[in-house]
Structures are given as structure tokens and as C-alpha cells.
Image (cartoon, rainbow, N blue to C red; front, top):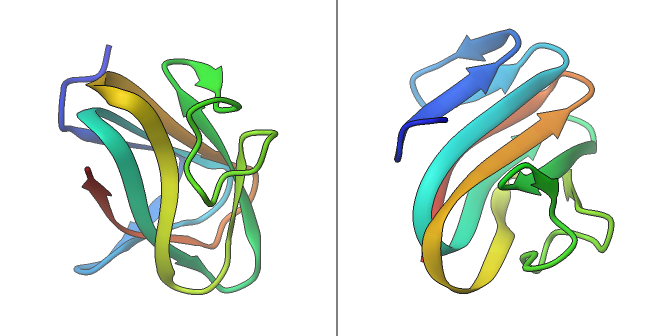
Length: 110
């Protein structure tokens, strides 16, 4: 089980001072204690990310930027609202992409 407040990157990443960019099939795992999860990200061309919470594709408790199938479309650099739980709690977030090009800047929580 991932440690609380520790970021795990799966796959090959190019880590820069301000962001990490995925180089192919990749994942991000983060265990958090919050109600809402926001993600500052971009991609050079539109990129789909599967959003999972506690090992399940996020079809409930999804943020405003996640569609009914649990996918967020990353494009322009901005803040994406990924998760909106009914109350604060400890959960594990997983993001999965099938191609490179994701620029991950930061997560924020509410």
C-alpha cells in the first residue's frame, strides 16, 4: 500500500525542475487525505487519463473534469478537478495513460 502523501511514478518519466513528463505508457499513484483532488497538468496533444480511486475506475465521486466513464482529457495547461468525495477521507488516486506526453506539474487538495 502506498505511503500517505508520497508520489509514485510508474513507467518512464523525464523529471524537470517544474514538472515530470511521461515518455510512454505510465501511471501516477498518490495516497491522500482530502475531499477534493485537483491536478495541474498539460499535454502537447490531447491525452486521455483513466482516473481511479481505491483501485476502481472513478465513475462516482468524480470531479468536474472527469467524464462518466472515469476519464479526464488533458490538453491545455490548467487545473483539472479529478475527485469530489462527499467528505474528507484517506484514499489512493491512480492515473493511467496509454501514451507519453503528459506533463504533470502538481496536485492540490481541498
